[in-house]
Length: 291
Image (cartoon, rainbow, N blue to C red; front, top):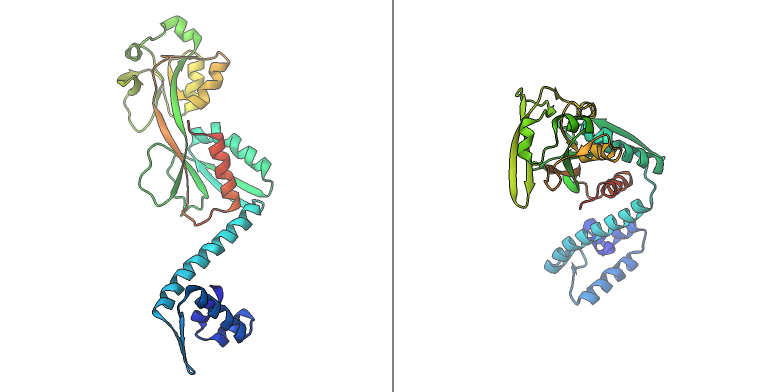
């Protein structure tokens, strides 16, 4: 196929032979063998010129696709065997990146010493292509995009409070009880001093309007306030679970599902990810598996 395509590209057996460093007779034998196997003429030859037959033109176009795929497969095999190297630029939100992604990046850097990693944390939605990132981790529903999205485990929230707060104010037994509690509200774009927390159980959905005296725009600060007994926090499970294990906070409303958001790692739709990106994606999927 390679010889046949070269003959079609060059326009003659002699020119193809020069390109391939073969004799013209050997080139002719390759094409003749291909025609014999197909049982049809691919090139119409005269003493003065040669042209592709109708079948030859269609076969030529398909051969180019097949050969390109073969080249890609060879390149993939080389890349899989190659040691990851170069600079890897990753972006994620501040809370998730500092609490959960940073340890994964550290482990990746230790495993692949020839890769330099830039971990850029920002709650701003970056442009992966324009800003030169290899991959971004995004939480929430994805907008339509030309990027490739690889799903990770969901980003779950859970309600919790310090034992001292529960002794002082009591333990809510139903989501509706939260309306009578001091809740730590995440300070977003809204200036409202209340916020809606949503819970679900057996198909039942409960939306609760919660409020409190303390509003913050940093999740870690809210957790510190919760530990100090300032109120009930709704925070990411990955940050709260260690505090539950140490008995510094207690899980509230067991049996009720708090919000969870989908999480994906996005990267450019290249035909073949580099070794450094491929190994990082594999580590992310292992670190944040889907249920």
